Picture 1 (cartoon, helix red, strand yellow):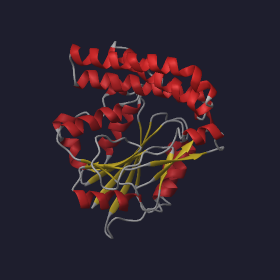
Picture 2: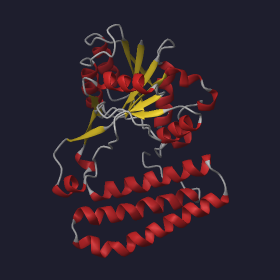
Picture 3: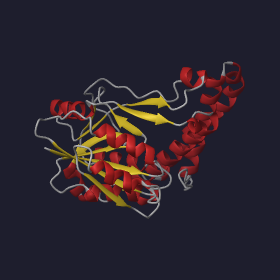
Picture 4: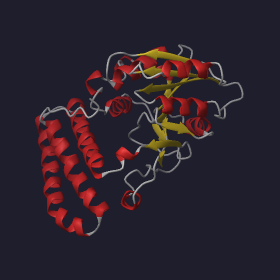
Length: 304
């Protein structure tokens, strides 16, 4: 068995250093399993090449580095898939601000064997670099998703996933990550929605945890609300692309409009129930506004 662990990075040299060190400590899912790390740098002036070259001589696994000068996460992710070895059986993807637990691959592939899944994904547990305020903690804004271990799920994301390498050659899934989502986000949701519609099976591994480093600039109301607008916008664009039709768009827009009205009416009361409820009401409105903007053809490039 051979596993290619793919990482796309942008201006996070410390994250890459931390991640590669953690990969060296991974337990093997099989005694003869082979692992390689593939790092694609979307900002090649930050010293990531030197970090990868140093890691290649100090950790157990080969480390392959490449620069992708075209801005956008989709370009970087696609290049990583291209660079992964042709004889790989599995492709794992993890983000550059995360580290896997020692049993990460063991748990992902245990669930795969038990369910015969084509895609297995798991939770990302937050680690706040400088702590988090009480309302962030009580509001569970970064709480990891949880599902019964081994259960089928309708989605997956690239912060913690493994899938059959053969998906790369399915013409319905080429290119894997659409370039039009490169600066807006949603490229992974778009990919795995197509994977599901192509008949592949997605399952959840609840013990396959990774830890996500959350910087202080994300633990504020402005970032949380803007994130929901971006998610809603990307989701609407994906749905409009994969399920075209005026009837669907009108139904989705009507539902979003109702959500906006409900959120606006709830804002005054939410303000008195505490900061967490206040921000959550704003998030609901922002998400639905993003949906409407997406249905109208607008794109919010939050990563530009």
